[in-house]
Amino acid sequence: MCYSLTDFDYHLPGELIAQKPAAPRDHARLLVYERTQKEITDDYFYNLHKYLVPGTTLVVNNSKVEKCRLLFEDGKVEIFVINSVDGRRVKALVRPGKKFKKGKIVELENNIRATVEEVSDDGIRTLTLSHDPGDKALEPYRYTPFPPYIRQDETLSDEYQTIFADSPGSKAAPTAGLHFTPDLVKKLKSHGFGWKEITLHVGLGTFSPVKTDNIEDHVMHSEWYRIDSETAEDLDGAKHLTAVGTTSVRVLESVLKKYNHIEACSGETDIFIKPGFSFRAADSLITNFHLPKSTLLMLVAAFMGFDEMHRVYRHAISQEYRFYSFGDAMLIL
Image (cartoon, rainbow, N blue to C red; front, side):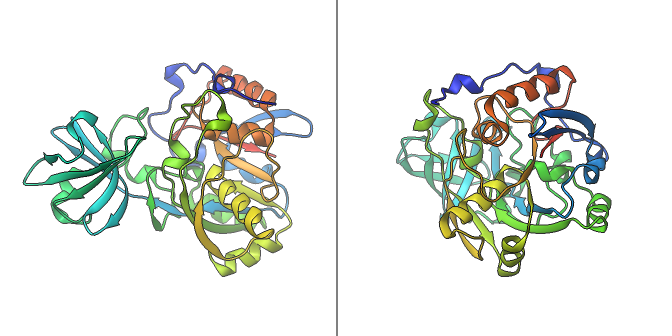
């Protein structure tokens, strides 16, 4: 079946967009969906162990969010650094675009400048900064890259990192992992559940909006991932895998597709998982509630079924679950 972008639309009351996480983190609500019986159960994340398949291994993304958002002139001018090219050259999204025309030297603050080398068709600029991206002169202008539906509040910066984040490189948090606390992880391990960490640096591939009405025409940006040798061996021998977040799913499915098993590797993936996809690696999925018309929602629809995705989301809205990055969670069995 061919799906259009509007097939993945839904109405969300604005008050259900979470502006801060639950406290403690594991007190977020948990919607449990059992695919075989199509049953919905409402609970809390701290009871996760009651629903996981016995002996499953949880696969989490340990990528750490970088303060890659540079704001100048009280937020009126923005350089969102996507990645470093070499030296002082970076790829970046900018605002306002008309200020960053090709060949222009943009004067910012305190002798900080950006020279616009290239402007791609999708609006991404290649900039040469007057300072190295890691220079302390940029420190006062660095901000956490909260998504646009969350008010910029640096007091929540630590809340926008998972407790196991240790590999800097993400431009957004792997949000399904935000619900875990040290006590909950300890409890899960004590119940015999496995715990393995992989890395995918969240970039444009995850959060870029879909602009084509026919979703088949959407092109994903590549994102870097890594699985170390010990982890790969354990994952390849696991009988059941519970992916924590859509990023973990994308790594597992990308690697299995490429090698026909899970092995130690690193590289780039632009996998686009949408309805009709055949999952080979992920048996269960923990995820948040995602934006309408997003590739993340399409992945969830592929995992649980298109019609059931809409039914479950209607239930979550009617029960006033909290949505998006700081919102509640769903376990799909």
